[in-house]
Length: 186
Length: 186
DNA sequence: TCCGATGGCTAGCGAGTGTTAGCCGCTACC
DNA sequence: GGTAGCGGCTAACACTCGCTAGCCATCGGA
Image 1 (cartoon, rainbow over the protein chains, first blue to last red):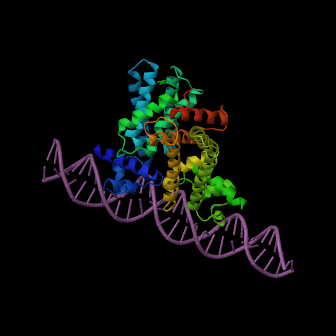
Image 2: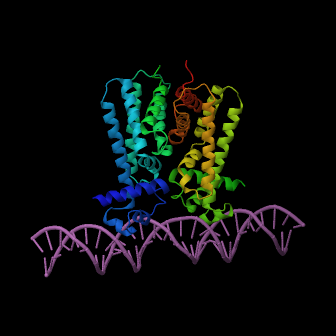
Image 3: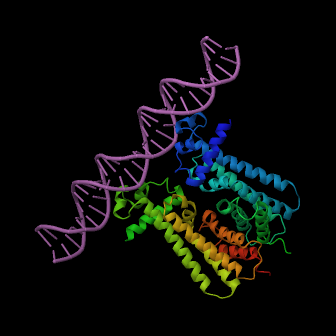
């Protein structure tokens, strides 16, 4: 259903710009050229729109992570690829990432708990990556948070039209990340 | 007026937990033991509450930054102190920082522009700090964003009751930051 | 040609919102 | 002991919102 997809895309843009609570069904409708009530022919509810967006975001983020990590057995290379995927995801899906981080509180139970669990799992996977490698950090947990924050920040400031290309930004962030955990002695 | 302060504190907690739009004046009133309409004897409006919170946050953040940087002339030491102040602020004022980052969109003009300008100024000051020192980064701008993101992340995950003390967390983050910009060769 | 589904629309319900108006008890002060 | 005013309160206004009900035009397939 391509109309449903258009609605989700419009909702994403509006949620990112104004926030979930401040966005009205009439706004979303207007963005796809129909009236508010007509949306209910395509989606179940406003909350459902948010749930769909957030779970999809976490699903593809974790999928990209698994693909990236699976490609190598070397701990340093695995972390490098994980950070690359993490940063690249936040560059390519800025709005999804932004909504995912800022609208957790608008999620009703049990969806909130589900998404939070997914996020915790993702963080744990970074922690494991750091633990298993020849890295030098005081606190593994803090290091994992630092790597995650480094990428999530992109959701705020990254712009596709910026002077640096996606690859340049990703490379630079990966470099920062590796320095941070004490790899990359050169 | 100590009642006004209590109201601002309650509003801060509620804005952080539920978001500005989802928080009602009745909620804020209940948190300080009065009814919603009675709040208007102490504050001008709900929006005014948010404006006050956000401008105060930026003011004290910038003040702490200036104090920290003023204490030394050595570029590395200046950056170290700036990061220390930045991280410490986000640990001590978690909620303010969280609201400051997530409710920018709930700010009506011209306040939004004012606060954004203040934030840009703050970022620029980090950029200058990096430019003027013996650091090694590909992009100064990206490095400044990275340092800022490193501290702002605390707003999400830091808890006072955590196993690491404030000082331990700050030291660790400062270490990460200095490694990131290529200082701290040891 | 008829029919059922699809997907728009308007009207409207019911709940909730920020804010104002106006009332009243308490307290401080002359 | 009167009174000004501070700071509570309830009632109510003027919306707004998500969502449902019910109507109707279009159109593909039997």
